Image 1 (cartoon, rainbow, N blue to C red):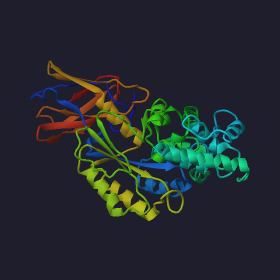
Image 2 (spheres, rainbow, N blue to C red; image 1 turned 120 degrees about the horizontal axis):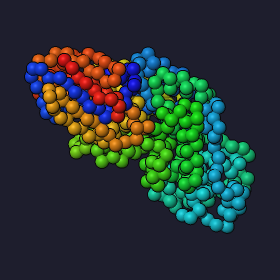
Image 3 (tube, rainbow, N blue to C red; image 1 turned 90 degrees about the vertical axis):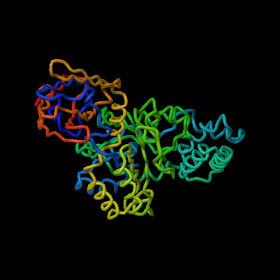
Image 4 (tube, helix red, strand yellow; image 1 turned 135 degrees about the vertical axis):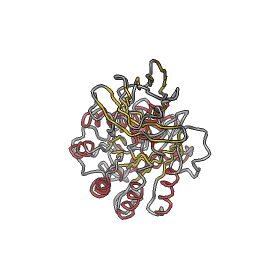
Length: 443
């Protein structure tokens, strides 16, 4: 039993039976619901970072620690000191592929193999061709992607590159952290999640190389941090390529790229679509502040989330100060994070993984309420994996009108909470643990 059951930041969902002794007065039938957000908040905010560039930890992390803000770091695992898996091409010897390119033009049948091998041909500077060609291919400009591959392989055959290996810029900017560092960050409550082994352009990879990038990154994190941190991933560059997504869904439970749930409306960070109207239970609104994005606009995203009941604002940061893509200056970041922190009374600020867990658990839960002999029994059951989905749900139970304080008991855990009121009457909010013992409410 979790000793922090009733007030802890991380508590699993419940299969709970709650009983409350009613005397006098009577609670409503069907009097227990699951709040839309943890702790009954109005909306959710997740602060996320991509790439694990050094300034994220030497500068931005200090701001979050001071304000006690959680965050998710999607890290490139290859450059982390102590990693076992680094960039490689999974496939035929590259010498054979280079030789074939002299007589067989790049086409639909051989593009993915050639683009997958592009960064591992034994020469400096070839990775940029992989990145550009993968982007062209994903956007439907396939003939341009084929031409770019033909150009690359022709230059390789002609000896236009210096020998060696050179990873992408994001990989280089992540060099300097160790797994000991990430264990410390994880112990402090930050979510460390996968951003692949090398930050490859996945739409330009064949399945074997996509799996290597995602599976080996997952394995690396599991070996160093444990299963808890293998829940979330972000496929690099934010691609939502269907072929890539179908492979990634089988490796990670939650993708920031795309979460195709019937109850969730997704707006990616490049979209100009407004959150409302929507007929979904939840809206995941991703926003990616760029270097030039005004603080006023960034604050307006928080205000919109704060004033609605169904919104999950996912903020995507990359560079910090002078290092990384579209770097955000620390003074701007600090003012923005304080703005978010000051609205914590109405906003649930949580990691990407925790919010994804909560909304899925809530949507897959069933509540049954019964009353007998002056007691109300509520069972709450969800159908998800107990291993991956261990976050608490916040329950709201209406209680008899004569109660002013309620003791909540589950197993050996006990807490007394004050009654709150709304237009329907008196109620309490409380956390409950999943699939364990009954929860009892007593006057």
